Image 1 (cartoon, rainbow, N blue to C red):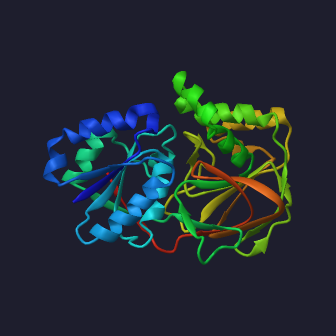
Image 2: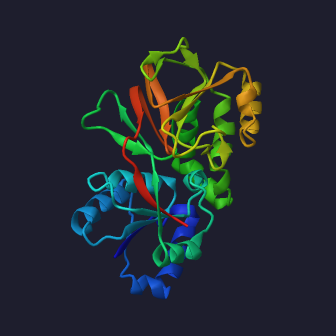
Length: 309
């Protein structure tokens, strides 16, 4: 049996349209697929938590139809049964995770591939905990977690009014770049202490600090061109204080992965990262925004199983 968790709002209705086509596919009934539609933020996580608890013995996999945010919730929802395979059919505005794992097929073809001849691949993601809540607050991210401007842009992109007009103008694929343009004018350096594998960096302010599992974020930007999803280490990218004009130029070059050649951009590798600040740090994790004073990040020691094409 496969369980499908569908975000009907993803992709400005694209996910729901694709779901109806999948329901009419003979394999849907043949493989005893059952589906659930999410109703609000956090619902995909609670659904994944419930279905793995009830059906873990007979469950072939959870098929996620939506965007990276929906996948983020499901990955965290299977935490009690981490061996549960996850199948991702991208239908969001960014879809960076499928770029990170080099998934080629899309839509109905991808669904057929999953249920006809599933191929399992082990992926090492990363865990994070906010404000020293390591014991009860540890969560997992697939793409990236970022602080400073990264968090400000995500907060702008997640505003309901902003999302509404990008949908009306059919600009959902440009959600992050447009939010970036709106955010740069008010960008200011954040102050922090940064530790990589336990060693403190001699750097205490930056425009942004981004920790990522693979190269892509923001809908295809190559924020860490050399990063690999199955590496034992994460990529840490720091943008030093920089003028607004140069910051804009840097983000244009991010689409081509050329920003790392700038003197204001530094990149490291580490399996653990700790960042803390005296002031609230705006942050984003897999596109969801918030603020914190302290965050511990560590490459996962156990793998998550994804079906690939």
